[in-house]
View 1: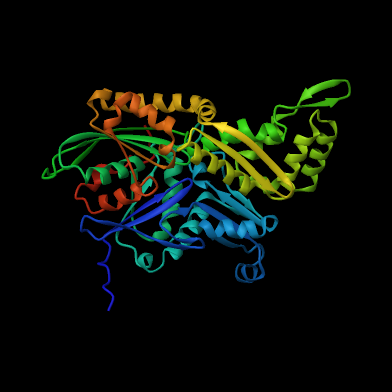
View 2: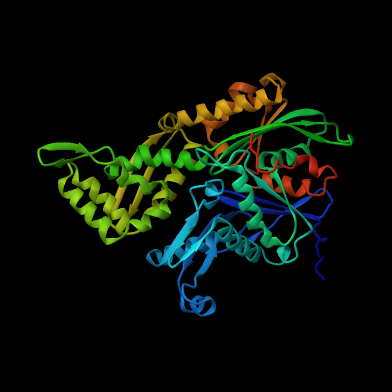
Length: 445
């Protein structure tokens, strides 16, 4: 007979901008990641995405305007199968603290953030299968140190998170995401140390500093400071799109209007910040505007490429190519950007130096935020014993170099870039001093 796992005593949920991860802790000092039986094979990382569409069964069940929906990789598959009949949402966590976001328009329905969140959670739990059918009493959820947006409202975000996670039917404990990673990393240390964690997510980069005591200490870890900024992986992707791809689609070009030559308005390219929004541009009015623009453009072929991207629903593949380029440049000094689809071909050679120049303004601001957390903790760089880098963008050499320059290569550690937060949160759930780790309600540093 198969040996069943002991019942979990706590669960850690990393609800991320790009990906979400769940870990279970049976109270034995170990955390087990939940695997999802995704279309491409089992995976512990679940894409933070939703897809909605109308169908007869959903309408009969919910009445007029009934919607069917899916999440994660299943949402992507549904959207790619029928983009014009679907509404796709990704990175919706990024509007949690935005007072200007009231609801998403989905066919005949309007759904608030917390409603979107509950739908996402229901699919996340369902796809997790048996391990998530009976959640433990202690639930620890990560939250950003600083939410995305020019003027984020942390109290609003907290209220929306509370309404979203009310679906779980249990009290939820919120902890800064990098503190979750710090707790998990500290479990592997045998000596007292001062630890800095840098978490590079999809929407934000967050820092936490923790004092780690000896293993036999009554309180093993003490948080000393946290800071964050709304710049991370999504911004780096858009830098590639803006500098490399959009000029090939007409951005920065000109058109003739009577006897004047004018620059093409940047508004034509605003939707390229998110591949899923490109599907909404495939409407008669927009395509007619672009056809007129192509007729008057100095470089009509570039506008033709833009029209091809929109008409043939190429946004997903285009952003996948952008992501692949970023990943290749993390391990190679140069790479070829290649994208083909529906008769459209875009090719360009890109060096790592090019990419680093595009993200240089972002890295400067990340460095300034690093200075902020050090000042908040009352420490200098030489007083940090370990630096743990986590999150997908921590693999970018220019990001790593930022920390090696300040702290030295020997103090830098990394690993489990996409799962370390959930792992640490679940371990924290059985700690006697859990209350000491909780994020202040409705606040951000």
